[in-house]
Amino acid sequence: MNFYITDDDEIVRSMLAQMIEDEDLGQVVGESEDGALLDGETLNIKKVDILLIDLLMPQRDGLETIRAIKPSFKGKIIMISQIESKDLICEAYLLGIEHYVNKPINKIEVLAVLQKVMEHIRLEKSIYDIQKSLNNVLQIEPKWKPSAYKEDNIKTYGQFLLSELGISGESGSRDLLDILVYLYNFEKKYTFDHEMPSLTTIYEQVAAKKLGATADDEDVRREIKASKQRVRRTIYHSLNHLASLGLTDFSNVLFEKYASHFFDFTVVRKRMLELKNESGSPATSTRVNTKKFIQTLYFEAKQMMSE
Image 1: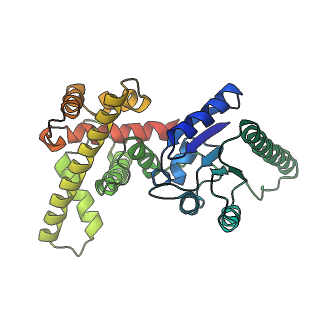
Image 2 (image 1 turned 60 degrees about the horizontal axis):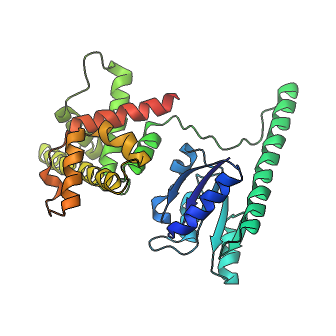
């Protein structure tokens, strides 16, 4: 089973992860400190079976988060909180949680709830497998299927990568996703026999599609300029995010996986030193390779689609 933990208390996240690992229930595939950092598609890509989530969090609470992710996330949700309001607990159940566990955490209670939910998941899968076998014999289409984790959609995997890079909420992230779609369609039509289109061509084509055929040249030029600025700022935010992760923990999984892949490591190292020395030098003073970032983002998303 795959678990994901969302709680603004690092100690609570650590305790829950330790319980899951000690009892060999599965693996914790991700953690976050606020519901604002979650989206359903990302959880699906991570193949999350059970989401453990707090009710009260600074930016987006558990109830708001469940409303946001429920349309796409089909895994099970367990809420763990110190709030004892019957109205809030009732609302949580109406939103579809499996169980509500009160803090402070009681290991025996938490493990019992996890085992119960895991058994529920196994039972659902068994029912589906039986139904599938019967349908194969009777040649009947199944009425329901478990949630599909692989969406054959370049945007879905692009969004996941942007989330991993710490920039899914930045304004330029939409531009980057539009660029991925353009490159995907371009490659299907022309292939990349020699190389990808130039950045100038990419920005022009994406801006033209966004504004439509009725836009005049001046509008397109303004949109190209604005898009370049948004993308550049977003890439700098990613550099800052990864450098911060590496400064805190050089063995951080995301830092090791993405820092030298999306950026020249000398650039990352320079930004880490600036942050460490609190020089006040803005990230935008550091030169980054925009085309390298976009190429890497595209090929990483493509690779995930093929897996």
